[in-house]
Length: 122
Image: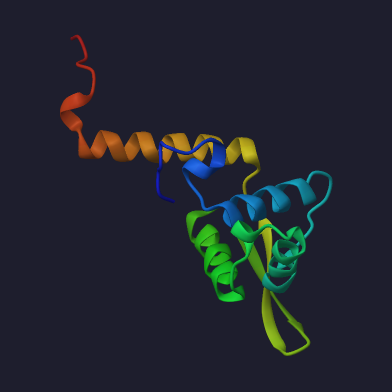
């Protein structure tokens, strides 16, 4: 994630196609734990027809795996056509993600600028 304060909403943290994917994953999982493969994610973006959402399948895979590393998504290995592949599930809902982002950014700012922390009275 890169913080870009010139943008609005989730685009302050992500590229347009990444925002579209995260929202799609969260919205698809409102009632049940629905998985999405990188191929399904790629096809979803292709179906939007929006040029700023057109990405390579490799970019989609890199993003999904980055979200796994960040703890936003999790995956399971499945066997299917063409061998083994990952299917992704949300590990955090949007509200949990918001708390995670605020906590992560706050902790990093405290680490980088310790002198800016409020002084505690003894």
